[in-house]
Image (cartoon, rainbow, N blue to C red; front, top):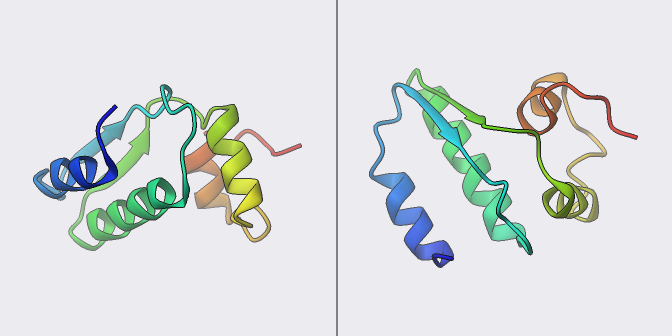
Length: 90
């Protein structure tokens, strides 16, 4: 598993004006830096006319992190579509 710094460098090298599909299905123990990196990537890509999406809805570990971090409390429909592919949270 690459470090968060390696992931950040890799993502920064991507052209942000197209579509970026992230596969985060193998994240077993993500921390808030992962959510921050993904959020930043989404914001930058949107600003440059691009789009970021997950290849599959957030898995159990990432969903738990989003809950613990309070991200699901004020989740917009766009955020729900991004993280959970529109599946309502339980």
